Length: 405
Image 1 (tube, helix red, strand yellow):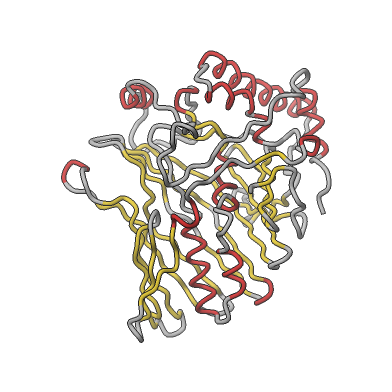
Image 2 (tube, rainbow, N blue to C red):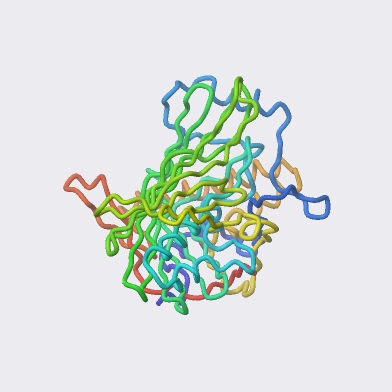
């Protein structure tokens, strides 16, 4: 079990961040459903002439180009790392939400899969046009606990950018393992970010493993700006043979006006007989229902307002226990500058993080050292060594010094 910060990388960061050991740990609110009030302002920033600025960034980019390594100025950043956003989609829920417990406590395989579908939909979170999280640096971590659920993420690669997640709940005997590589591409009037990799949810009490993917993020620039989740999500349990097929859709009228960008439809079926058991229909930001195809009975399986509204930022329970690789510490100065709209300071803070990362890379190359993740094992799936998977080193994730209430 992990009980301390990753050793070698911490030494590197300690050297590279000399004089910055007492930087602030800055944690911000996640995206949630409601419009923020004046007393609790949103931290997303709308740059002046946002569309014009965005188009100026993309003016030399050809349609179909991979935007993975595109560097954005601070004006376009939402004040947190992508690593934190991945983590929030798992741990940041309302205090009365018990979706994971429900997955474990349902009596039949069909109802457990139905609950897994609801939980998977809950990881689809609102986002905002024109702002993007920071690109995580190599070895960056994010470690947060929510009740009995302990969540640990690490940026295991930056070329290509790959984030790994391991989460465990020892009370419910549940484990999650994610491996995600976002690949954003410019489509001329839009940007589409496809997320490669898979998500695994294990209900150990039932000996069931659920494998799933996630939808694509579509960012429309013209004719009307907007952000929506689109694409197909499949959830498979090999042990039971049950499958859920979901489709995230956007429906717009002429010129992109009207319609709904948060639709989700699908079905649950038995893969051995192809018999459709449930039909799924709804909006992931409102409610999602299932219809029993044999009885015609309809019921709500997911209510977004109950799960992802009124979300608060995590808090630091033990500042001394926070690793030097923690996202909220590495990006603390940049986040603080963005919140206060101090764009000159934000530019300096962003450059400082990037420069320290470059120095560590040069130092490793000079010494002939090969960097390896501290919390995950790399397994190559073909002889070329180009395709790989990441599995957690430890069976259980320890409680974190940062907690989500």
